[in-house]
Length: 195
Image 1 (tube, rainbow, N blue to C red):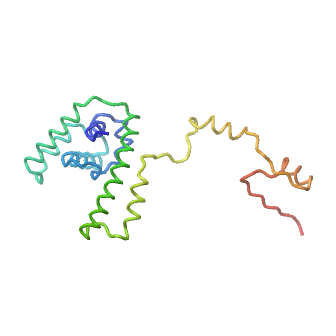
Image 2 (cartoon, one colour):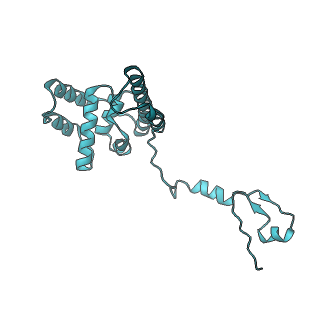
Image 3 (cartoon, rainbow, N blue to C red):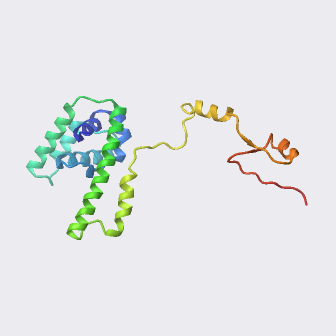
């Protein structure tokens, strides 16, 4: 997955932008101009709560006094290149971006761990933190589904409600009759009675 295509999607495809922006991290990109663009897109998104256009990002890069002339020119050129790319289907780009982010997160932790082993130190990482960092990198996911969709899940719910369940028969027939034929799997039964 080319990182420029991701930047293009973030600048020109509103649906893709809404699904991906919260998950993007500038560390996923090797090119400093791409990191700059992601940083500016996230700044714009945090301040204005909407998708930035390519002209917005170009203006933000031009007005950033902390950047050198070379960084400014490289950033503006990368924005222009991203804007000129042909759009890709939102769903395909979303899927490929998730794979890209997972791979990059893992590679970044791997690089930091190698640096820790060779240099003996790194700015944010100690040997005890490595397992947690790898676990975090491996768990990168863009899935934001919570609960269920009432209409989209209707066929599965109908199947669940109408599916014949396998019952566990008890030796006492009167209990089987009271329970509608026996015990159902994955159900909790609490017998109560008078003493």
